[in-house]
Amino acid sequence: KNVIALFTCYILWGFQPLYWALLSHLDSFQILACRIVMAALFSVLILGFTHRLPELKALFQNRDIMKILLPATVFLLADWAIFIVVVNAGHVLDASLGYYVTPLVLFAISVAIYKERCTKVQLLSLAVAAIGVIVSTVAFGSFPWIALIIAVNWAVYTALKKKVQIDGV
Image 1 (cartoon, rainbow, N blue to C red):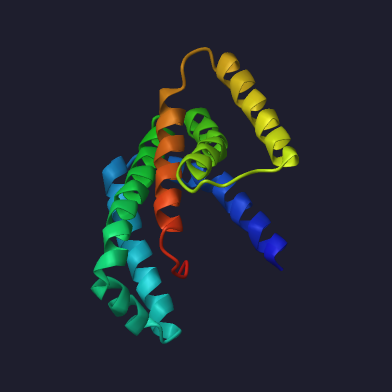
Image 2 (cartoon, rainbow, N blue to C red; image 1 turned 90 degrees about the horizontal axis):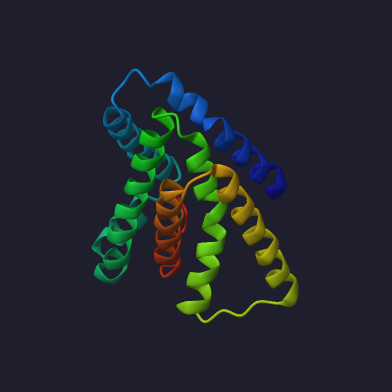
């Protein structure tokens, strides 16, 4: 069940640039505004149908959680904006490389901030991924600034969200 959900998410994520390309005649920030409104509306509807709106209200009233979630929201907004602008400008490979690099940045954050340790198999996986990034960067032909910005931005968002134990919905 979870594997099917995972693959469905990755397939939808993979086709997402095609969707944004269909909207390329619109201003990227109009698309972003629409995405924000629709995501908020959809989230409130889900919470309403599942009778969880009081959880949302309690979340907004918790200052300690909001001190973390507000900056996380800024990083999520930046990710959405960068992705839409980059894809609409025809730089899909830059965005793809950024999300490919993200786990490496997350690993660095996990070790540096959360003092996590990894096994030899995980280190081997990290090395293989790093080699993939190096090969992709060399093939790219120039320093992948956009990819690096996406990777760091998403990794910081993820690290912030890790600090609060709340349901994804």
